[in-house]
Image (cartoon, rainbow, N blue to C red):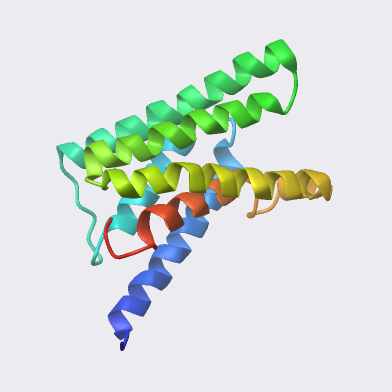
Length: 169
């Protein structure tokens, strides 16, 4: 099956925009609520079939949900971390976001229930395995300041599970 130049260009553009979003998430707002809308826009860009961003009430609802979910994840992390001061706070907070954002994707952007049912454990399992690897190899501290970090790994897994296996969004 031949791949058109336009398809390659669109994929390359989406990849660059993901990396820019990951960089912005890391450098400007890892501990602030606005990672939600930044990654929400990246998701909408990845959803696009052409070089156009579809803006309507459903995509706006998804951006609002993405913002709320990331703010909730931070709140859960901060509450649990203040009480227990352990890595379990991060794991639980990420589990909350991993469950909620794909459900918002299904509700607002028409992803199938089957895709979401596969994506939720896939995203969390992949993230957790890579997080444990980074922690055990002592790369987690070094990776917290690199473009490849616990946030960008989760985001990349989200894009993989929601956009790559098959052609549906």
